[in-house]
Length: 292
Length: 256
Image (cartoon, chains in turn red, yellow):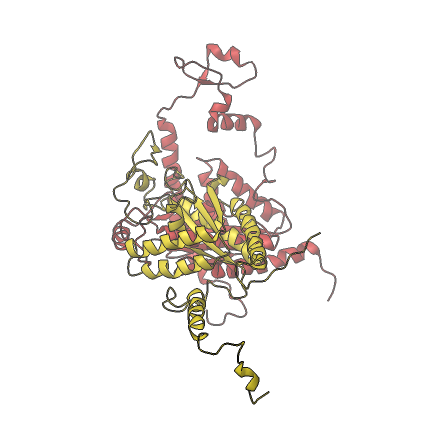
């Protein structure tokens, strides 16, 4: 025994937390008892980098994702240890035979026939999905997150990270993948986002953003005969000459931008897949796992 | 001053009732955990109902037995029947439901429900106006247990809530297990009325967890029926013997 640095101890413990999460997810109570869960943990920066780079691309259309990339980069720059636990399962087959109807089909047989023919990818995940499998998968992930919380490791369940990891092939044969990133020595890294600072955040940008997502908070009283406009300043009455309206309308520029980001993301995923496959071959063996 | 005697037997005595009340406290704490569980975008979507009343439990168990016969199939018939017994044996039941899964999809086009980059799998099978699904619509295809299709993302989120609730039960060493059958029957009886997808978590603080080690034909062979049979047979066999006031044969036992 000797003198240990506390931060190093906390960082070293992070892999144990990931083990605890995996243990918990596999042990989580299941209603179906038929969920086939897969878990991998990424522990090095280079293993997480493709996911973070995908956030950069997504951020061109949805700025919210950029802050996720900032957050990870800040952590790596400051020498923090991050462990990303990826949990996945194939939810597109129902072997339950319960015929509950939650999927929209009368029987599990009808669902399976439809699923076999129409299995496809949405913006994030694959479907269609057996809802009881989805519930059990959610329970497994929730149990893993609770395990991390019990171990005082800052964590957050992320669907986007999971979706990118699924597309990149970190977990094969899974229709739904969720990520639980873990970080030690920090509080609320993934929530209050201390990575966002003056360099990366503009108050003016936020004001536009907030007026976009809750326009009713900024609307003056209006009669049914007028089109509501959005107040953008304290002396908003002065804007009456050239008000800023909220009117549902087509915006081909946004559509083009969105499609461009999706195309770039698809190209990026295809480019990075071999790299991920190579990393997976070098999957770190734990001392106890001699058979893998 | 507090003086509480707690014992699990005999059932339904004040000592047993005190034990049940403890389980209700656990159910309350589980509900808080379910509400604070992680979920997509942090948007509220979970409702809960706690039940700990023998009459209501009996009503629920009978509904499940009705489902076993009317809606059950080869796979679910015995689930309903066996788990109805567990409902009767529970100290408390916690229902957790997602009230957005039917008429308020997440709208991210995530792909879970139909494998397409939109939410059409749900919207195309529902009536509504301006993208607002009408939850009051009478659906002909809804003859089964659940009125689907639903937003699978919300259902998966409900899993997080179920996990947090179960984690609390686990931490408090209260036996708990989630069930489809209990949720489905409970929903039809009006628990979590706003939710199309409900999970029923049975809770118990007996020395023996009544939700595991379930023998075949559990609806016929279980503790409740065994005790009832004992009462029946003892009642029958006690009638063999003389009037103890006139002659007590035990006094003539040579072993004494």
